[in-house]
Length: 76
Ligand SMILES: NC(=O)c1ccc[n+]([C@@H]2O[C@H](COP(=O)([O-])OP(=O)(O)OC[C@H]3O[C@@H](n4cnc5c(N)ncnc54)[C@H](O)[C@@H]3O)[C@@H](O)[C@H]2O)c1
Image 1 (cartoon, protein in one colour):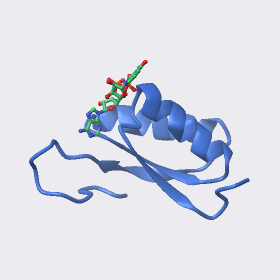
Image 2 (cartoon, rainbow, N blue to C red):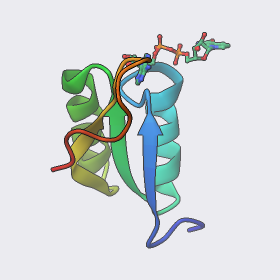
Image 3 (tube, rainbow, N blue to C red):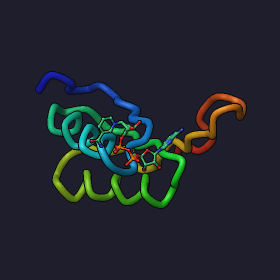
Image 4 (cartoon, rainbow, N blue to C red):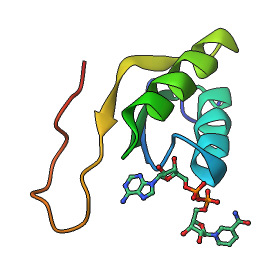
């Protein structure tokens, strides 16, 4: 496990390539914080990672649209 005790934040993790990256990082031991513009998709991926027996943080990081102020808004 290359990423044991590490936290990985995946922007765009709610679908497509980002979702796949979430699972790859989790398999390597990272706790994955899924970030996406679409909060519902981010939550679903976070739950799927946990259901697969890997670690995902109990919340998600809400991404902001380009041009909005920076920084995570929700991180439960
Ligand atoms: N899918 C492919 O085969 C492929 C090939 C080459 C390049 N790409 C590029 O790679 C990127 C990802 O592709 P994909 O198919 O996974 O994309 P996708 O359209 O499935 O998007 C993945 C996720 O990113 C989220 N997202 C979009 N903009 C965001 C933002 N600003 N902040 C946070 N989340 C955001 C979406 O809500 C979605 O859940 C795209 O830029 C695409 O053009 C894709």
